[in-house]
Amino acid sequence: MSTLHIVSTSPFDSNALLSALKTASQDDAILLIQNGVYAAIEAPHMSVMMALAPSGLRMYALAEDVDARALHGLTQHITKIGYSDFVTLVCEHHNSVSWN
Amino acid sequence: MIISVMVTGSPVSQQAAQSALSFCEAALCAGHQIYRVFFYEDAVYVGSALSVSPQDERNLNAAWSEFVQRHQLDAVICVASALKRGILNNSEATRYQKPAANLEAGFELSGLGQWVDACLNSDRVVSFGA
Amino acid sequence: MKTLTFLARQAPFGSSSAKACLDMVLASAVFEQQVNYVFMDDGVWQLVRGHAPEGIGAKNVMAALQALELYGVEHIYALEESLTERQLTQAHLQIPVRLCSRAELSALVQSSDVVTAL
Image 1 (tube, chains in turn green, red, orange):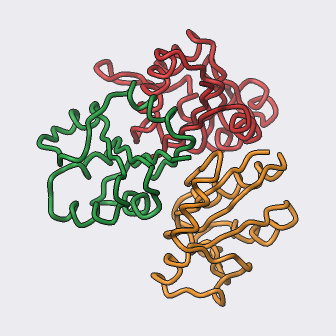
Image 2 (cartoon, rainbow over the protein chains, first blue to last red):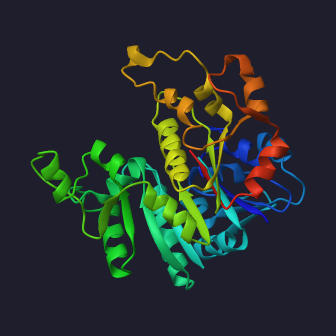
């Protein structure tokens, strides 16, 4: 039993990611989409927030959204994936929460 | 797997409807079945047949309409959200004595029960908001 | 029967999210499913008693919270952390709710078939 947390708003603008990180369980995964991908940058502010995540939480960012926003040098514990992997993640987790 | 999708964000001012469409395309491509797509709140604007996009911009409404018709998907527009926002089919236009109906081909107006039904009959449910 | 969990995360006025979430909860209850209704983040403001939205041309949609029990929605939670952050206690709320910790919320999400956050 695990949950896919889909975060679609920027961490600089909303508390969606914070809520998702605090609610997530160890075997869950976080997928950043839309403006949520801004959380994937290498920045001290983000490291502090990510430290709230349970250990072992897997983190992904949607490639189409990352590329559209010219984000380079993503923090290394975040994996870039495409829509087909997004579908796979949905199937691998028994439910999902969309945090907007 | 049997998947249902809910969209709540506006196709005009937010990215939700675009993300949802790309997700649905990928899901079908991977061999999954889409039980229903449910449009709620501002996402009901996807069902307007009257939206006009500049020539160099993609018309998301047309893309959704084409997609649901090509794959014969069950695409439901929440009727309560739609009436408030001026998205009407013929029978609602007649019932409320409005000058025109504008529901895009491929979509149907129905209630929130359709969303609950989708939750009960799907293996996975994904929402696309703001 | 499926377990449908709703996370109400937005303030009651200023957007239609609170009403949208409430309508979904009521629709789910009509189908006699196991419904969990969780108020968290700014969503806990929805629970506050004494709303008087006439001056902003809004309906007091949250008055309907009183009717939840009639619809069979019995599992109503507020995230304790969100209440505390906003200096709210049970005494400020218009209906009795179960306070839940973050760990209890995580467990609730894990054990649900469908989770909808609005």
